[in-house]
Image (tube, rainbow, N blue to C red; front, top):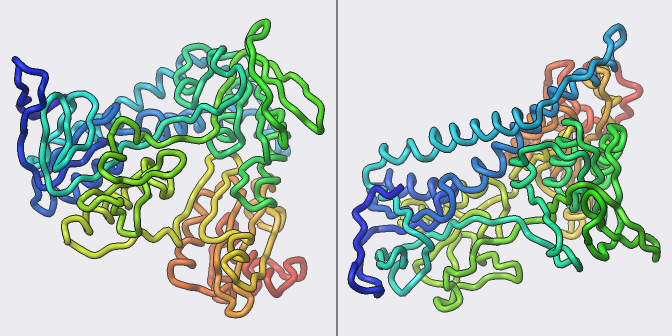
Length: 483
């Protein structure tokens, strides 16, 4: 899809000069579109150079398809979970895996058109170029045998799944997150390699859709989360029948009868785990190769992520970067935000600095895991005199009424000033609850102020108030709505 007239020299393979733009954006995902729209609204002429499928990771292979299938799995599981209520019998929903996958694929196509492709005509000064791989050159970008020029360039080429270096892994057919979400037929069993947020989400999704799941990780689930929160999720997954294997070393992968075998080491002894398919969810790596960054002095880290400053500028004057290709937070909303920061600074519109101090994050498991700000360990490392409050969900009336007390809430505060520093939650409605805590951090509230705030009764978010009160009160001695 190219809305430009291609300027190619048909008689030569040499690159020829193209048009002059105010800004070139390489990558047409969330960060790329955010940057292009920001610049276009400022009256600038933009060349948006496609890199992969238009729309990027989130709409095509990440947020949209995974959350759609997670919701489908949640609906299928609802019949069994209904039995927690007295007087309601459980039931088993039939699952048509191919139909679920097709419905998800259709939704992705619809969203890609609605939020990306169909937006382009609304911005006349954005020229979309999709003409093969792009690479940076002096003064611009080479693409499709020509060079387009601009004084400013933004790199937003995203990331892709990382394949770990395990002996024999290249001898078997593995699935990454994209492969599992588009698999035409349901596998009988899978091993999910990696206990980060992608692994946890997909493991539970597949299990609820009728797949026997073994979730394997070298450390614990969600190693970046608070231990209390990670343990609550681990227990919830085990209760649903997912085999969770933690603290293992990966030894080798090999073909096995009916599937694949993963050899692991536990306590000095090796053992084999087998399943029909192996799903690899061991993180993502930046799409920075082949851009010829090194030739232009643009520095990257060991994983290929572009190093940027608080203004999102790279180590090359006139070049900025945003999104998953950088060494910043890998969330779609932070990619779009980082792109706005970059373009505002690049064009001199408004001086902005990348600020993630009150950035909420969510793991869409059930219970959902969410957090914002500093963990206890991070706060101590930062030099704070820390105090914490931890309450399990059986102390939250909403959870008791819903007959679902899986989860925990943990708050972290400065012991000297009582200022809240961060918090995490594992709860069925944790994703919606965390934004309230993000606002308390953004505006510098104390634990005392949060505990004194009026919250509606029988809501999950009320748990934040109760956790704040628990810093200096015993919840067991308070009546409903007291304090």
